[in-house]
Length: 400
Image 1: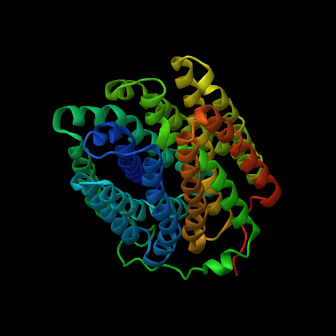
Image 2: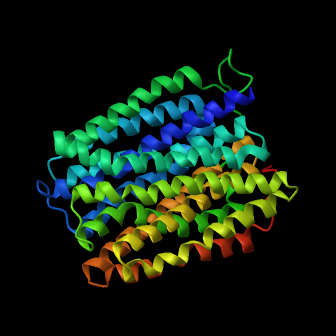
């Protein structure tokens, strides 16, 4: 079944693409929304916070759900939930309803990457896992690249509410494909029987979990700021309108897709060349982190070069993300992978939640985007140092 497992990778990648399209709907449509529903910088940060708090909590709970119900059933339920939540934005009449919809969307999307990580552990050998996760993680770029021009077009033709209705419908359509195609290897003709999985208390006794959670807290804090505030930065600082954002904002996300693919490929290539799993993962992680400090110069260059620097940062971030999210599958047994990936992702979402509020406060108090990007430029490097110090060896271990 070698060919079929790559089809599985594409199937999951498409779900991640839908996820990232859905979460870009608000940032790209915010200017159109503000004509009907006033939203300040701090409130925009609070909308992102509502998403990320729910996303973080359900990242952990969703990982546990996937380990308990199995990948096939768990991912189906998660996708139905987040698709309906996305559609609910379209009926919002005020800030409170937008916040509630954002909270519900975060609850659903939180289980996406734990399900993806567990599916990779179920289907792929260690020598192919980072490549497979690279393909899956590239879905983030596909969704985010399509989002700015696609959303701008829908707003122009139908209005901002239809952006959310259409997004939700696409997600529901995907669930029929998933139910038809996905199964656990060697269990096609019988009911999925999940293995017993360890508790969070047991998993949190491992320093590797804490190291990955801390690194993800820092790196995703930067990522969620870039993703959630890129369009707003272009609106507020560079004077773009919705059409210009649609024209330019997809470029960094396209670079992020290339980073996902190349980061995963590079680590797999090192393994095939005879290097240890530990060296192969950490070398690729270090190379990814080294690209991030350049974001410091975004506010000091013309807009064309700013887009280039954003693209470099997005490339490095998603190369990094591909590798960090596959490490749980490298270290922990299959029964624990979803739960560990959920805890790691929860750390990332909490980092995003905390620093979205920090950034909103900084901007409303006139500290400026220069201070914001200067702060964020250090996070991946610090996260890599944490991994070196805490995750001493990337190698399989037992949880019992």
